[in-house]
Image (cartoon, rainbow, N blue to C red; front, side, top):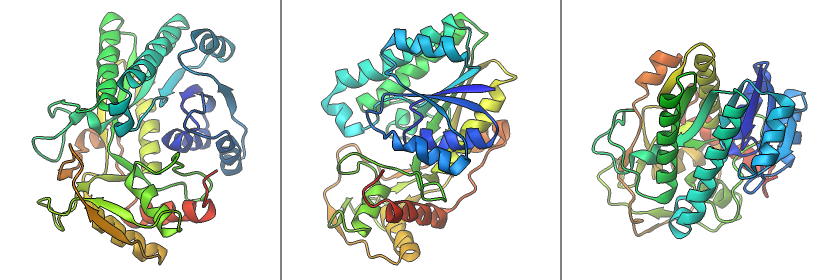
Length: 335
């Protein structure tokens, strides 16, 4: 079976491509490399022993995307491609809406033309905004608070409308919580441009000496130690969730929405402590003011994914930290 993966050289995309190849799927990657690196392709080959087909194509380029579909005739699509920095989205909302939404519209139009109607979509827990209560279920209120989250939410609605218009579609919407970690080989991992937006790569870059200290945004939340609590999930567990979702789409039509997390949370300082223990490195930090919009606690209810997909996370916080450090240690400057 042939799977087209948009954004397949990115952080989550590359790990999912490894899982797909190892599961026996034939994959085609489409990526414009705006926030990733072509060297990922060699790393995927090193891990799996197989070459993967790759096209440097922007989803906004309908002609080029159509030619890839015409040449390879995929059976399904896993759609990762999109801009993803919350802060940047606030500064550049039109850019985010145009790229993320128009890119998805073009992709769906090309899929429809080629009778490809199975899609796993990379959404985000940011669609929930500030939750009324935790754990967050798939039925919790939707209230995205920034352009990035709203672009994901709008795409979800577009995909639901698409199914209403043609119930031959099979679509799985995956709402990620906080992916961290890396492949156990240390060959692929999170490789942010510039100063990291996410906590774990910030921690690892402090540990390796690229950054002086970690900024901890607030220590007066109503949590175990005053710092924010989040649901961190190993990126390989997350990738395996995509394969389980894909399997469901092969024999069912409809639109299915799942939270992918662990169902429990760790505070910022708990994560720092766990990382220090497995790496043997000290991570200096400074408490700074809270960021506007940040919340105290956020973690998933993953019951639905467990019972409908047969999926649960398998890797704990120790493995997440160890694998993240291995990646950073072997690749101090990224790819």
